[in-house]
Length: 453
Image (cartoon, one colour):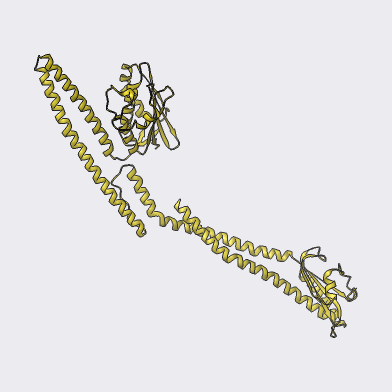
């Protein structure tokens, strides 16, 4: 987009410069051509008038030769008329001898107009000059009719040549402008490529510090920010790993201790207390595992890869089919036979589907149906999971991705409200979107959109 704008601006400036120079020059040349034509015609007419003013045979012969030569060598026509409307010598009477040009010349005035030339029956220049004797008496007139076609043809050639030259210069300017714009924007394209690599999870990407000073400063700042983000994510990953070890180990030890106590006592009251404590430890373990899964989803930034969505969905169907059969819920798959590839971090799509399918199976009633559809839409792959559960209101769907939030239908069920929060984090990390809508059956429709590969 920037390249096109730069090229368009450059070409526009060149076009304005060419127009500012070429148009005035062409107008000047056009006027000069008409002026030269008028001057040449006037010289011939004045020469004929001087010869006509001398009443002797050599002058009349010279005038006849001039008229014949003019009509032979030019596309124009020269007519001669004596005072009183008589033809000059043996020459025939001129066409339209009573026109305005002859009338003005016989009255002693020069007449010149561009317009319809009656003698030629065409558009052109009509010029008439009086022939005056030495005593000032008008003895006749010479009228020259010169067609406009040759002049117009020459004018068109002048304009066409300059238009063709301007077009050629603009084409060259566009090519040079494109090369220059690409060279100027190359650092910006490199920054965009580096940002795309960062978006896909490769924190080792660095921008080249080249180009103008402003671009170098931006690249340096972006590299520094990337290093800081990399350090923070490494620190968070280390924290998650340490928390996993520090939290799971004592909980495992506590559960083993409770199991040993339960095995070593016969007191019903004590055994009941130990069982309640064991149930709380199990609940605490599940909560810790959910929190750690969410923390890992937030901390993990990895490069994406081409993932065959329909195959991954089919594999997760096989994993969850036993659970669905146990709850008498039917699993249905609507996916194309050919592979549909999306861009995602390996393993993330499986985690998304596991959390969404777990919720769908938990809330679907017996004899219900859970449907998963996969289709490609433009540059995206859309995965939709529909269930037959009680559904959520619009306000509840807005809060469904919050941590620890559980809808009215989830009260009293196992779980901590972390499943959809994990799904959203994973989807966002992979450059996609996730939203909830009302399913046709009244349940919930979870729509996951990923970038198509």
